[in-house]
Amino acid sequence: MPEKLATFRCDDALWEAFKQKAKANGSNASAVLLQYVRAYIDGFSTDTDSNPEHLDARINAHLERQLAPVFKELAELREEMAKSAA
Image 1 (cartoon, rainbow, N blue to C red):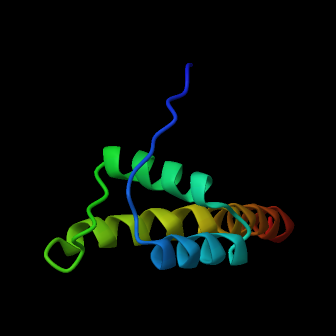
Image 2 (image 1 turned 180 degrees about the horizontal axis):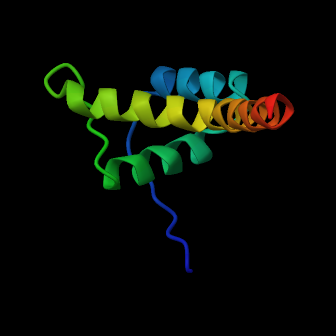
C-alpha cells in the first residue's frame, strides 16, 4: 500500500516533548501517530470524559488480551485435575 508523507504544524516544544515521550516508551513519533490514527478510525474518541464507554471498551479489550493466556492455563489445569480425580 502506498504511504503518504503527512506534515502538520506543531509548537516546537510540544513536538520535542512528544518525541521524547515516545522514545522513553520504546517507540518513535511516527509510530505513535500511526497508532493514534488507526485507533481514531476504529472509533477511539479523544474526549473520554464525555464518552466513558470508549474508555471502558478499551480497558475491557486490553484486560481480555492480557488475561487470555491465564484463563487458558487455568482451563488446562482444571482439565488435568479432573482427569486425575477420575
